[in-house]
Image 1 (tube, rainbow, N blue to C red):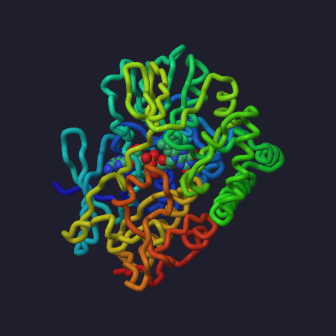
Image 2: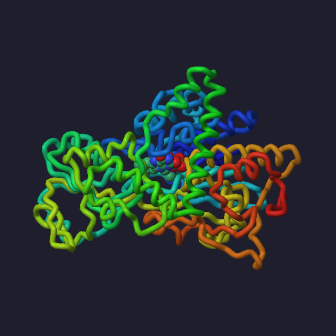
Length: 481
Ligand SMILES: Cc1cc2nc3c(=O)[nH]c(=O)nc-3n(C[C@H](O)[C@H](O)[C@H](O)COP(=O)(O)OP(=O)(O)OC[C@H]3O[C@@H](n4cnc5c(N)ncnc54)[C@H](O)[C@@H]3O)c2cc1C
């Protein structure tokens, strides 16, 4: 039996897949589109993560889609509200009906003779195939089934419960318990104050400090603009305001790290009582924005620390004991529940095995083209967001670019577009210049970037607006057929 064929096949029904499918539907109305989703739900990250306090740390004017204003008053939103926003968008745009749940793409093979991808899909116990003219991979970079838990010595001895935030049991009750949260990333920073509301005590156990900045969950400028301007005007203004602010903060951090260190430290000092060992727990060894900066909505982490319901221990875990964690310094953290907020497992591009005309593609051997296609791989786009700004800013631009590219090909009768690798004179660098532990764990299997446009991944929204939003789709970096 012939495989079903669509013009554009989107992999993943998360924030990126749903947003991209909406744009393809709207901008390429004659094209057939399907979305393959491994799980049984829409929302990706925002459906998987259900731990207490789960929320964005980006503002929702930039994490929301350009084409559908975020209309709620809070700018830092809870996970459930983001999930609802993605679902509502899918329903409103008629894209929910395009999703085929429990369809995991395991392989995709490009054939230049037929100018088609043949996609191999696991669907329950069955393996099925589909073909498509263009493959748009919006599979994220995290494994959705389980997070990353290092092998701490003695874990098996611990008499209490060990939970990873990514698999938070719905029935878990931590009321009156002593909780240790291992980690210092965004998840730990949101979990600690949320758990502290009911726990006897929460200890954030971190190997080394990270940057934490208190931000308001409401934005007074946004409240004002939304009052005086219609939503369709206020939203893009706020989106640009916040995108440019984030970009300026990032660039300042890269150019004047000492100054930004001092500003962040000043902010932390103001939040904590006199005499608090700020440098011990909140002075990282790395420069700001060489790893992601964490945000505490309305300073909730600091409030929990001030109240005495939470505390921080900065030390190496020597071993788990029956009663908690023995630290290298000799200190013991008593715990009934240990939460390993030790990050996600990274699986680039949904773990899909690619071949082009029979030859296997190793992602690590490819070079990104404009941060959204891969050298030598025809008719494939990857929806991957920024590390230094909201994911969706890049996804929106990528989807728009894909639509312009598809329209260009349709109008000229072209069937294949292949990004070229740069010449040997162009130095190559890792995919992202970012030191977060989960990025370091996955970087070896990621493509590389070139030092010059169009192979450079600038991580710069303003530049990408010019490059992806308005730049030519037929530059010298691609070959059409
Ligand atoms: C707790 C948490 C908080 C975050 N907060 C922010 C934030 O504030 N700002 C920000 O910019 N980013 C944040 N991020 C990053 C976040 O991942 C992105 O914002 C965004 O949600 C990613 O969307 P996505 O659709 O690209 O990927 P995902 O949300 O991971 O969705 C990918 C989807 O693809 C499916 N899939 C994967 N592989 C396959 C396959 N082979 N076949 C079929 N389907 C497949 C998955 O099941 C999943 O549903 C956060 C991440 C986490 C974990």
